[in-house]
Image: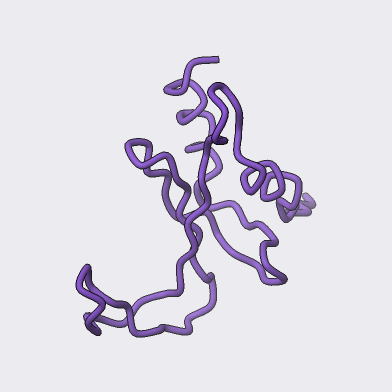
Length: 94
């Protein structure tokens, strides 16, 4: 599978919830150029975020970056595989 195809498939998971580091996170964005997923805290708790210089900049949700690809070519990162295995299912009843 080509990287672009994979990124498009992963983007379809935006808004999904995952267990990671003992907490629940929501997939907020896929940064294809950087090869990372951005997870954000789904609660309304805001933290002070830093700018590129490490200075306090603004308040926003806590975020975590997950690499998409492994260090070996044509592999997925261990972090991504673990994250996908810990997707929080939604029970929709009609």
